[in-house]
Image 1 (spheres, rainbow, N blue to C red):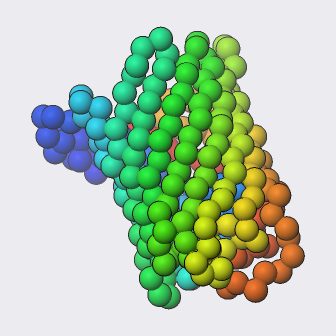
Image 2 (cartoon, rainbow, N blue to C red):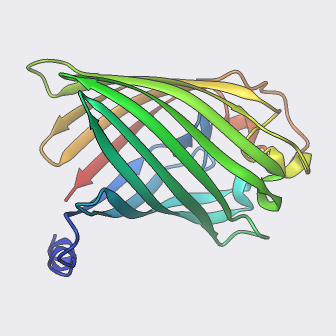
Length: 239
């Protein structure tokens, strides 16, 4: 808390807000596949928003030597973005993220850009998103993910229910590297979860699934044994 307060006092005048959080998850799942080799994953993040709508953030997550990322110990997601409230509950946002892997064997870093649109009405929100990583050697081609999401706060309770579905596709230059983000090729993922939010503390349970074939794949980066159905838990403390 003291560190967070010191950081807040150092925020320049143009910054509208500084947010930070620490969390731990039983498994770091992204688009239905594990990024922490199915193991406990600690994380910390900080972000700054400006009155003009620009934001910058860094999130560091333990990847526990996951072979998907060349045995990396952690990933730092460095993001710059922009968001705009259009009015009537409509919000648009875009960003660019660099995924930087520490302790990996070989070059694993890659960059992707994203765009999203959401509509909120009362305690409910629906949205669509697209994420695109251009052709890069680290991911064996390019990668496109398109998804839809929804969430609703249960009135008079601290619970929020959320759900999502997405599809990953792309080109292949190196099939072994392409298996990092698409084990076995193009696939669909889905999720259903519930969060309990009380003040700065969020407790969440999330079920994720994919249609990835669970057969053993030859690529050392596929890690297909952690690409199936799973329920994970997450504890987040925000400052």
